[in-house]
Amino acid sequence: MKRSTLTCTAVLLAVLGVTGVAQKTTPLKTGGGGSEHQRVDWVIDGANIAIEYGRPALKGRVPGKDIDPYEGKEWRTGADEQTTLITDKPLKFGTLAVPAGRYGIHSIPVKGQWQLIISKRPKGWGIPYPAGEDLGRVAMTMSKPPKPGEQLTISIDDTPAGGTLHIDWGATRASIPFTVG
Image 1 (tube, rainbow, N blue to C red):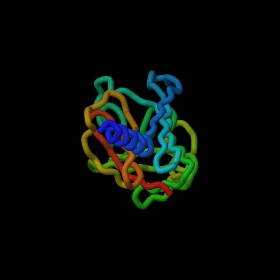
Image 2: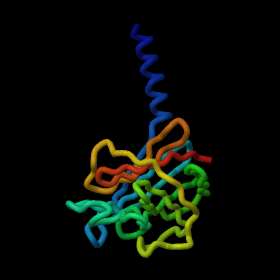
Image 3: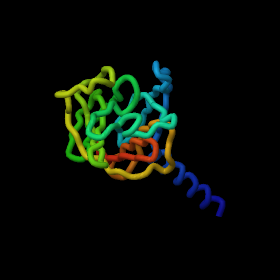
Image 4: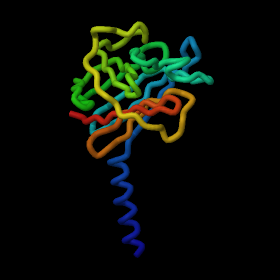
């Protein structure tokens, strides 16, 4: 019985070690408006993926009324500098193919739905929006986050088919699945 239990435990730990998502969060700085900036790294299906962004706080403000994102207006999806996606392997968000490299992440709410915008501009201030530099746009799925958050949070969940990118802001969650390769 002991040997069987130890074998099962060893197999379980090996499986968890192989399928677990390693997330590493590195503080970068505090922006001029007080927003915390961070880099979050994941390994999803062999791809090293990082997102660097400023995390604005609601501070009693209502998104779309008192603070971004506003209806029909491109948003840097963060604070201060544009939010940046870095990947060492190609990704595919819906029909949007994203080659390995460094890109800007923006979003736009339109009639209650958000679109993810991947910009070819690798770095830059978050505003004005870099019109004409879109790699592409793709619709996101809207839902509620597990719990409303005071600060903007961007996360990735590992899935059997790749991953899912989540953008949580207040009581809103915009998500999009992606594949690697």
